Length: 578
Image (cartoon, rainbow, N blue to C red; front, top):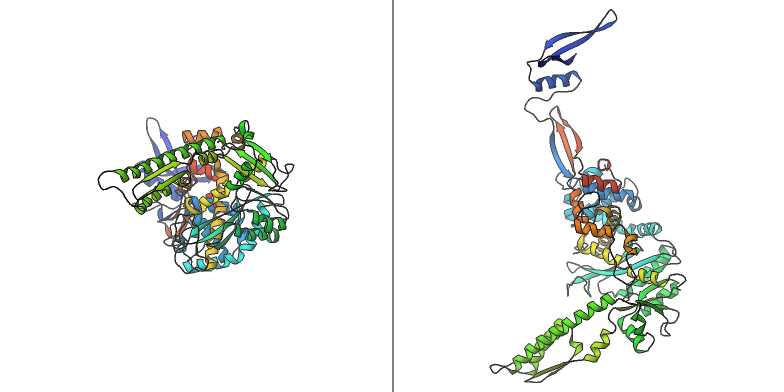
């Protein structure tokens, strides 16, 4: 049987219920019922039944959504993690603890929080992410996550070695820098009072160093006690590069506070590693004062290679950034003027006729506050008595300091035939990529701080987990660059730069994205965080029908144009992440 609509001249078509039959070898049809007076929805229901379907009872919705979970950002992060095969490095397939670590890495990329918050987000009944659903984790509690962290820290050497094989080769540049983060509580064996890069003086902290490849992709991390000086962390990295990673020829790039004369002499040179660093300001001043470095070299250039008997077997590439010099000159002039203005205010208080400021101690306290605030005490001679204050600029010192504005010297043991002057300076400047990693780790995305763990092993595991999360995010940023404010045309940007010493330029395409807020294909430009939030609006729905409420199936919302492009760039199909 079937329903047929028969045209009826100027009248509405006739809706007929018919059946086919065979007579004398011919197919014929006959009308069983005229349905023209039936309501359209009743006709549609009967048509569905005749085709083998099931009709929905009147008054009931055809689909009932039992649960909706944000899914797009989970699919993106989990898909990239699997695409780069990080999960295979963490542990064998089907291992429960490996799956929990993968889930914590993805959760850290999407919504960083404590392990208790992560456990709640992974709850299959009440969690706020589709992660537990697509990974089939079942019930998860925070104690199980702590067990997974303990397992992860035992796997760290093997995972880092595997990452090094992927991202580091002999002869490559290796970027290294350190940072610190504060620790809550007072029971962690690693927590110490030290120099706080978080600006939280007097708090306990840990220090950690990150090794990256030349592009800034993190490969390894090490945690140290909070009062460990930067150079003291270097020996562990040398051992890691030589013994664990098996690299015999590596160029280690570190800042001037990291690769010091003592570290070069006692650790780097004996290990046979090449290195690139920079001179401290007093050393540069010594070269100028000793006549080795002539400032007239930079009258018509911004870079010059020199040698010095104070640095035998080394090459110094001295650079003069004239734009930076002008900016520092302006700032110094403003600070000197502000200091003089505040000192004159104190001076006026000492001579006013009524209730003058008197006493050398009282005057000195106010003067000290001013000099400490503007950091200009070294440029003034100040005389204080019980009844007076006089001050004068140290003009010769100011001019001597100004002569070194914008001047820096990159120092290396590499010959110019191996790495020319421009490439050497560019290599040192690439340390900014490690600094970008620290910004993402600490504040922007992954929030490694504050650290709530007390056991030293779990603190190390937490930092390592955050590094793995940034490893995933780094790959995501590279793939999504055309949609982000990132400059995805580095060659064009470099072509606009007339010198490696000059400030880095952004390519025309990157400037267009900044100015218009729109990509060349008309889609809005995003930050990484806003794009992840946008992807999160693609939902995973658990759906049932009134015909069989025991049968539950998954329906994904349709991606928007932005989401479709993001998944296309990532090479991911969100429906196939399960």
